[in-house]
Length: 494
Image (cartoon, rainbow, N blue to C red; front, side, top):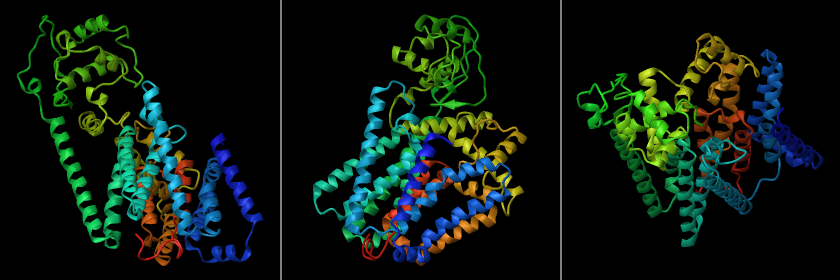
């Protein structure tokens, strides 16, 4: 067990012990009997325990249970304790927002002070994806507070914070977070728009429509700009460089920034000219895993220049430094949405031309899902057991000679993870109690609870959210605290 897992589990063991010592028999017994959301969490724990009987890797199954202890302990403590009243819940929500804001500024400080810091390491001690989920919830809370803020300056501060968080998500390359925010905004507006004042409802609808249209137009523009072929790629191919050396034109169709990456290549001249402008060896591996040569090819191609001595003359010192770091496209030096789109386009191009998914996280998910689905089809009813998901996925990828066989990854999808571990029977035993709790206790009468539920359910598609401590705590603590009660939510409160 890692130190972080042990420390977190110890914390929740102490909380449960304190909960037992301060046992309020009547109130907590009533909660244990009647709280259906708590029943759903406890049944989730029971499924994990029972399905240990069918696992071969018992040690990993026990580790999985230890890791997920907060998923069961937090609801047990929170949902059997006295619920927060609205006057108590709002300060807690505000404190949470301030904490996320402070951490985001820590990330900004690291970005400004640590050279070449990978975006995955901007925020310390938590996955950038999990922190993106916290930012999504924070934005929803800020919007909720803004609706109830009577003063204009409070709404102005809230608006500025939302803009900052959106910019920070771009720094994190948190593509999934933008999708989650968009879908959540649509759901909330459709479900709760009628509770808003008429003018505010119209403004929210127009704003969301404008945002969606802007994203569609921006996506179309970047798609056209990326694939619209430039003159160098449409003119008749030349056979020789200005120095009389032969060009290599590899016609594989790989496009980047409107240029064919492997047209007009003269490695001899590139190697010679690179030695004149850089002390970084031509065949060395950069910090991104590239050697200089392919990074240089892509960089010159993305700029629309030939890959020869003439093309090298167009490179500035900043370009040389970028290539030495393995940055293969000048667009990647520019912060903003264009970089995000171009990274996705290049991933698709590599898959289209070479069926390559190496180092491309978006495409790797599809490969993991395909392999996980094959495992599920062999164990559809009861799954492979609590501790065997990773082993079975690895064996499946080895059998199909998947390029991810040695990656250590397995599903990257929480729904598939449950299906693999517990089969349809266990999956339904987990799913149906949560649906029953949401329906019978009318949990979605709270906009904040619904927002968090949307964030969690959408994140389950591209992430195995409940396989990390940060994700477990986010889900268990968030759903438990934001669960609406008669004192924290009424039918007229958005």
